Structures are given as C-alpha cells and as structure tokens.
Image 1 (cartoon, rainbow, N blue to C red):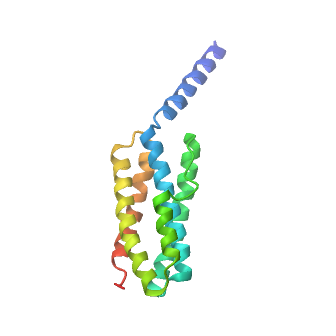
Image 2: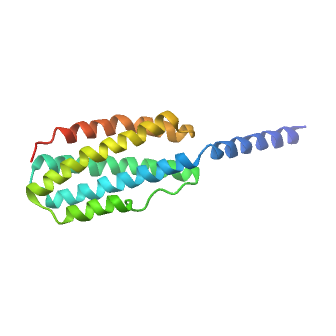
Image 3: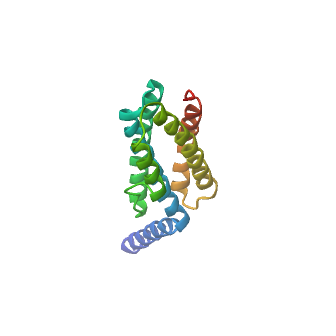
Length: 165
C-alpha cells in the first residue's frame, strides 16, 4: 500500500514538473532571449563608456549599468536554466551595430550618443518587461519581469537626468 502511495505521489510530482515546463511558451522564451540580449548590450556599452566617455556622470552611470545588468543577467540565466531555455550569448544584430558605431566615438560625441541610447534602450526594455509582467504565461518568468521593472524604470530616469551634451 505504501509503495503504491509513494508511486502515485512521485507520478503526481513529475506531472507538476512537466506542467510547469509546458507553461514556458514561445513568448516567454522570446522574452528571455530579448531581455538577456538587452542586458548584454547595456554591459558592453557600459564597459565602452568606461574608456570613451568624457563626463564623470556618464562614467558613473555606465558603471552602474554594468553592475546592475550583470546581476540581472546572472539571475535570468539561472531562471532560464531551470526552464531549459538558453539565454542570449551576444547582443542582437541591431544592438551590436549600435555598439560598433559607438566604438568610433569619444568625448562629448560619445557621451551624447550613450545618453541617448540609454534613454531609448531603457524605454524599450521597460516596455518588454511590462508586457511580460502582464501577459507572461510562466509564473516564474512573469515574476522575474515584475521584479526587474523598478530597476529598469530607475535606469531610464537616471539616463534622462544625465546632462545634455
């Protein structure tokens, strides 16, 4: 009798795990890929700003982007791994073009381009995360998106407060 109960319990638990994995839809998987790619872009641009920015405000902001987005991507990577989903390993092609374009800038030109990119990128990221937070089907991924929104909104606000160049 005990063996039957243990077997039934094990089967029900494995069914729960399968049901949980089934909830990770193509939309949730796309969110993970796009969110991780966006973080990789922020990290790359932040590191670039450390060398090419002339404004101490831009350098300070960029340093924070590297730290915050590295932590966010590590957390997202763990979550993605638990769902059997691969995070992005590089920025998307359009994001890489922005990075490559900004490699050719320095000083005030870099500061202006970086500030503009940070406002734009964080508006896009906030929209991406808000959509996942509202419509994501996987509870864990949806909760991750909700948890990251305050940070992204703060980043956007800080980017908007960078001095005009």
